[in-house]
Length: 258
Image (cartoon, rainbow, N blue to C red; front, side):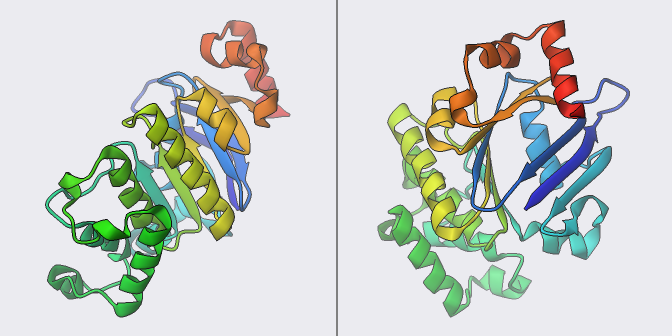
């Protein structure tokens, strides 16, 4: 389980980007985060994997307090957090297999990584995962020869190679066409079920959030103002999340306090 309590992130002397945010993500669930640009969605994900340092608050993953970790302990904790990126973050000149194996860099020696001498078990697992997502036949193909959907599947497998305890996805379908976007969202949902893996997705596409996730969290100005099943995301909730008003913000504050 991921448990976030009273999380604050402030850049410089400005207003906080995240404001006393609290959230729990249980196992085997797919949770989407929606909201306008600037709501704090991406900052939240980056605080979880410590790409940015929270100003205050607590982030606990399966009993480990992430905000207190430094150095080696932090590197080891990051192994447990898989990340899927909007821009794929692949090395174009490397093959699919080489990109996938980069998910194991935290587990093998620098020499083995440089020489690309991957453990037999890692290669076996990579082929199993690539077969599951439909890209095993591209194992020796360069990443820059793939389509957007194929590249995102490589990104998903790379994250799963870490054997993570949670998978974060930051706008994983934003660079894809509608059909491929739905395929990727369906894949993330199915993998969550199969691997019993919690998945937290930052997404702009509300239709995909409703269709492919178990729970929707709506953010506005760094606060959670909606947290419920997809069926509960009605027009009133959408208005509060995307249009907002002082009354909506006060309602969000009250929800946070309850």
